[in-house]
Length: 141
Ligand code: TYD
Image (cartoon, rainbow, N blue to C red):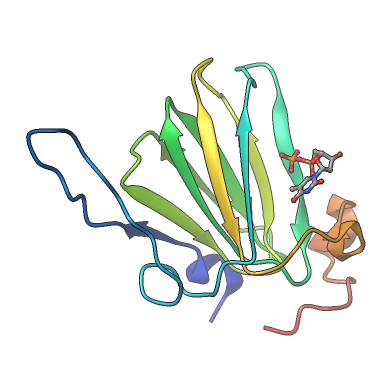
């Protein structure tokens, strides 16, 4: 399967009642990996582009829990998809070795990111041309 076709939106069940809403995300059932890291991005705006890399080992699920942002995903064949993230009940699953750009953040955007791996700067691919040419080691899935 093409890497871009492994990118998918995941809808989480909303457990709402008269007190408000709650979403629970559990390893292996709601998301397709075991979570080893959580980080969140906030305080960005519509002028910045974040991400701009691929990861050899990290998979991600990104959930915009407040506000909105856009995520552009590109695979090594240059195929691109853009996702508007504005719903806390929807996550975007990214497999390894896809290039991502996050942009168009609303001032109140909080982008929650779950990953199967701890942070390791050495597993980042930061050169887009090399990524596109598929020259990068580690594209094993
Ligand atoms: P960076 O990779 O530039 O963020 P983005 O992908 O959103 O553009 O990371 C910003 C800073 O945070 C940088 O100093 C590395 C650090 N960082 C961690 O310490 N742990 C992490 O899990 C991540 C994603 C970043």
